[in-house]
Image (cartoon, rainbow, N blue to C red; front, top):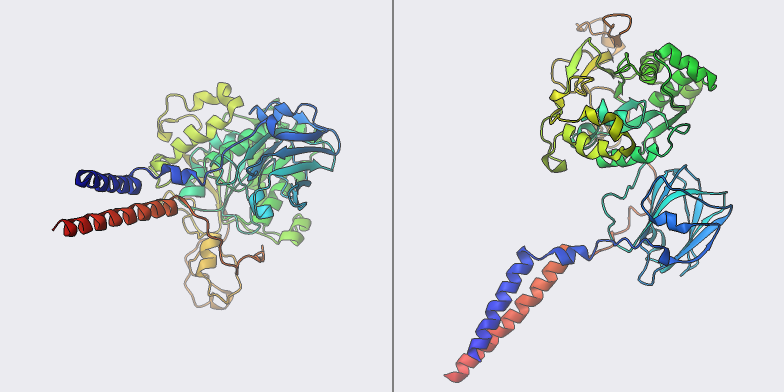
Length: 512
């Protein structure tokens, strides 16, 4: 008996060590959601001719519903969340909790990838839900269904860009340009530096390959950009060689150059970036739409601060004089970014590696045509054609760069400015925290001659209010996690171990 108790003590000690050090996975997995997507969940449908296409992970296959279609799903252990992928933004549709009769209006954000946390919407995971499309036919690519718990990181939970609070805007013509010619920029500034970064695309490829919009979102999410991008409604084409030809081509589609420039002006005024980044004026490899978008940006930054220019957006958003504008491959005031330094995020990957290995692979349709850009190049420095490291400071209101290789030199982000304000001070936007010379002190203060807005010449002619949160005052609901369960199990093991030791001690006294 003594031998048995000693073995029991040793076994309990071993179990306690294992639970505390090496076997926490099962408790952690208890809070992870499981994907249960399947046609077997469907118990009722109307207007869905072939729902099997919603569960095959093929974005190029679309389920087009009839008008006023609905789909009812049932899972006895509870449906925790839904993830829908649309061809085009649908608008509002309804999720009905068939357990309680409660409803939730989805689609207000107009995201084509939309995550819906049913547990958060209804307070518990319903066993049956109906998805109802009342506003015409819907074009659905995929429907992913999960149990209650934390969904995989690959599930995209987008947020809207905040008006007046974006730190950097990248003006990218096409859906893969941001992962090629601007490789490294997004993961570095959006994640490593934690700035508010927004990508605004010239085209949404609606006239050529609308499926590329899914590649855009997957690529952005992979490199850490969680802010939903802005898509211009302009057509995609390749049969032009110069910016002038591109604008003539756009005019045939009904878009004037002035209208397109106003589109950029409106975005600058709406989001008020500290830094704007655009394409090479020569279009990298000569693409006319790259040239045109660069022209639109360089024209827009000259007039976005003037209320007389495009007064409609000035009335709506106010004016904005962009502090710094960088143009890819611009030769004047060059800055060479080092995208080959390991980051604290992404498990120590470099910004270049993140774009190369995580971002660009999402653009499946472009691998054959543009895979050569990365092929055989382990570092950003090895890319000589259209290097993603080389930019030039085209225009500045905060003085020239001094060699720090940082686009935010002389700038503070919107968040940093708000943090520096006294609690009772109304927020104001300033591009830099350097002392500002006011009019009353100009006569008596010796000021270094740095113009308020400088446009750097090319070598040649070619060349919002916080929203109220009603839940803010309520105590957060306790949700047991893996650490909680490990500690609970360890505590039970230790209690049993203590009881065994007490039994051994009692038997020892009895034997005396």
